[in-house]
Image (cartoon, rainbow, N blue to C red):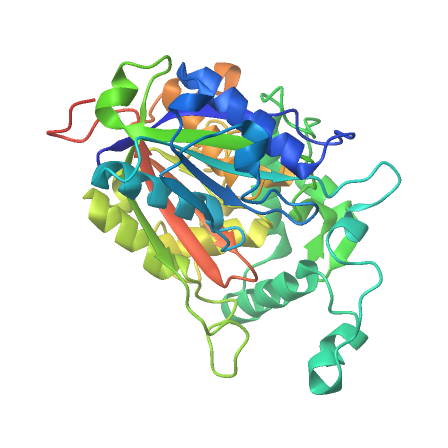
Length: 390
């Protein structure tokens, strides 16, 4: 690919009240344009992905005062959407369909007197008639339950343990301790993980991502143009998606193999790399299990060996494979798959401060949507591909 990320905008994130999702989205786009050194009227493409509450829509164009757009669309593959949007934006830039595309996500699920359970469907819900309502009637309502089923199947099949999942949470909290934007920064131990409340067996509270209000956006333009803008360009080397269509179906590999097994290797093939070439991973981490199964499916370890692979702290600060270096969604903040994209850009630019990793030539980013139903992968680099002016 010959496109690059030239601008990054992120609002205040966390328990931030008084703004709608659309307000957060508009602010994020303005911040991203300013970060790139562009004015809003230089943006000719806008891609929006919705959140859960009061989501931004295509009317964001009017809120921002954007005129004469040549690309405007809503992309909705749940947690796989941000990486998919960046891929769409890159192809639009390469084809000449647009010259500067803003990709944005925002959400405002938290209310001053509400809870995370209220934000993600744990409140009053109409029960469907017939067999379709069975799982709801039995309390299987939020994603926690379905992801817990996936994790339990992985454990029963391969011997993966709660302590191994806990090693992921502990490592990411250590990274979050160096991130001034993280919601949770106090160090945790494996004992803390094991002692945290059970949410949905086998998930403890510290296996689950945080809930946040806020918005994020990036500006995608040509590598040549990005070279002359205000920030170091982060080049989009390759991308891929996968939508297996067999999740939780009889005879499927639910919990064992995900769309990452198709999306990750394909993106790396297109970039001309292997897992051994990757310096830095920024993975979608709705749960600790999501990180583990993605590592397996991307080929960083053999299927079923993810537990042993993560147990020695190799993903944590000082480890051999830095992963989710801002704390990820488990400790930092949840802006769907924009969380790993933001950290990839910050690290790629060399702007991560205390948590900056030394090697960042090849960065792999993932997004996962639904209950392992959709997957998207990006390969990014601060270095332009061979033969590309940037």
